[in-house]
Image (cartoon, rainbow, N blue to C red; front, side, top):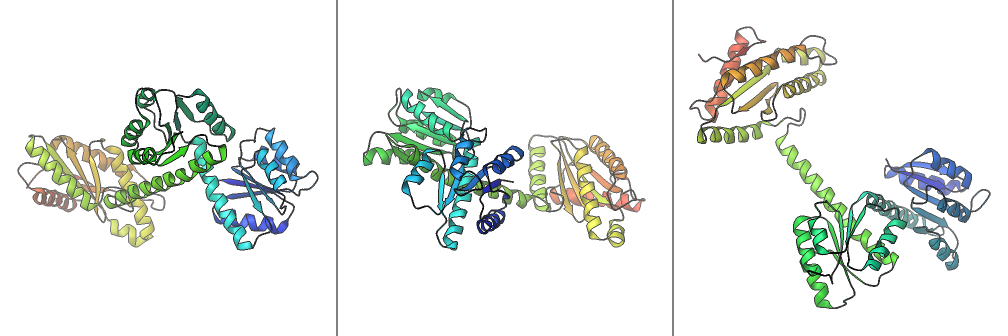
Length: 423
């Protein structure tokens, strides 16, 4: 959880800022003096400081000076003040503050400023850990960019003089800053190759050339932005953060897509593969076994007397038992085995390149392990019955139905047992 430290004597602004940051999931700390603020920083890990200029004792400007000479100088600082003096604002920016928020604006606009500050600071936090690669054959330009990043607490940057050095680096970078005019090969070609390898990374082209064709070529090669030299610190950071916001959105989108893809093949309760995906994998494994003349076995498990667990203690306990059994079975299998929840209290295991004897032995180990496992809320041992079968000439449906028949025989013969023989 991110933490904001708010240094102010105004109760009104303390309430407003506390509520806004907590609304976004931040932890809120407050102080009304330089001494109190420094004490809070000593005791807590803080990601953002918001200070007023009017504080108890010495003013907020002295707090900023104190902060600059402390171990906490890299924490982003925003100043809130009612001053309209441009001279004071310039002096504050020169002292290293990153944001200025006027107090004398309407409440809804102030809330908007705080929301933008929160979003912007999340980008700053990510920047501190993000790997950045800078390619420029000018030592002066590399040193200039290094200084900008260093002053903002961004230390995870690598610098390259020649394109071959960067392209040979196997590292994963979130941001590439690439000069267009380079020795050995053009920056456009470097950008093209980087984009092929790093689909979502931010690539910013930099150059002294201000011509529409050059800009167009860089962007069509895969650059996200084009920054004209010479540029100042403010412009550089603004463009970097602007592009990084897009990068973060793409990362979140890909994460959501991965989650959706996972949900499409997983059972929501046990996180095992679901029925549909089991059938897809079984079809693939049957095809491979027949094509390459390999052995394949399957096992179907069912929890004995599961209805009694639900009827006695409720479905929450029943769900807990299902999860315990699922984890127990998983712990008994090899990485190559495929486990899924077939439905209800039934589980299905696919054993690639495995004969009947080894599959039956695995099922027996699972039976014993389940009987020894315990679930909170259910004091009695839980047992499973299983039917095991090796593929001969059956199709998918016949294989599953025969495994189910052997499971049914295990039930008829007294439960808590494995049946691996045919009729």
